[in-house]
Length: 440
Ligand code: AMP
Ligand code: ZN
Image 1 (tube, helix red, strand yellow):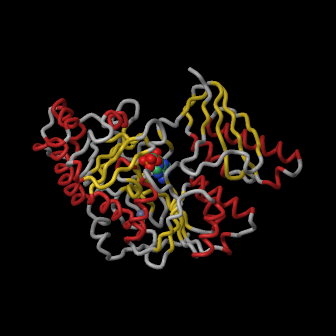
Image 2 (cartoon, protein in one colour; image 1 turned 45 degrees about the horizontal axis):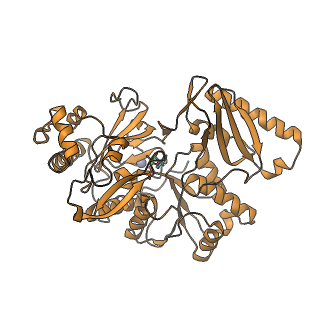
Image 3 (cartoon, protein in one colour; image 1 turned 120 degrees about the horizontal axis):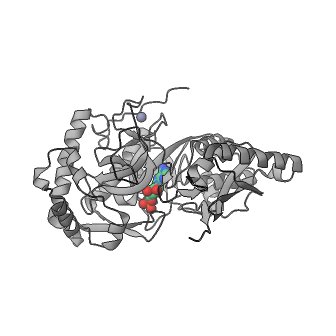
């Protein structure tokens, strides 16, 4: 494989933060952590109580590990303190509020100061420059504008690097295609599920994205997707796809991002302190071990969160990336701990099923997992149109192949239903892959 170009601009937003020695980073983190802890202790009654309960004095923080004495902040804490209960600044310092879908449950409100917005945009700028986007690029932003951070934070960061931004928002596929053609879009920011849908819409219109569009790269995030899906999207569009991870609670997109080596996402450790924990016991795990990502915001002003349980399952990749950046990488998100389901006593993430499906020739873009009982699962799979119109023998073979491959991976035999392309609902935002009709 050709080594990707290492992009190291000297632009001000990149500064020295990307390449920083381990010790220097730890010092920087401790400095910002101490500031954050002092601020929440003085200004947020919720954290004041937490510190007192743990017997932790923020004036007396000696090492990063000291925060392990504090209990976790959870999404329930955010809801209980909705909307302004966790503010660490006065309300008139807040210039924007976003909400997090968190993919499950009620919305949570996250407040931003002017400086928080600037910081988030700066981090996105860092990600864009790292992957080659800048002046001259035309970035069509197909994430949802509005209360979610996905679109707006990317928008600000993209403008910062001098790209031309088309604030398209999601959906209205005809218009998306028109915009891509009229403006010669070079970069798209999009959810994996919508990018697959868009690909089939292009195909139906007889447009070959490799020849008829000017696309070079795509940033895909907001929901889990497999490596197989990335490969599929890269092949269909003839572009580079980079994984982009973030969550509103930590400032939106730009928390962790892939570099040209596409081998895990660099987590910007000068802004976020990361721990991986066992989601059952809360025990902190070693690098390389899979568990739930817990993040502490180091530089947020309006609403810093300490030891926030993201519910996202990942691991820290050991070793330094070939690109030379020292920020540690997290692996592709396997799923949210609350997305995991149990069938026949086996823990399954929708991602595992997607990984298998996307590696099978003939499987189209969309699928759905249906749970009707605790010992049975049905997978509805859209398949290529030509197969659907073709020979029944081929369909049965495909059904058997899918059944066998999924069983080999998750150890539960699924029932496979094959559907025509377009038969399953398409979501403009995060895809809903699992329909759980089970009652307790
Ligand atoms: P929100 O705060 O509403 O934007 O949602 C953030 C959540 O979206 C995260 O906690 C993850 O569960 C999910 N998410 C965001 N980016 C990714 C990604 N690249 N891969 C997998 N899940 C993601
Ligand atoms: Zn790298």
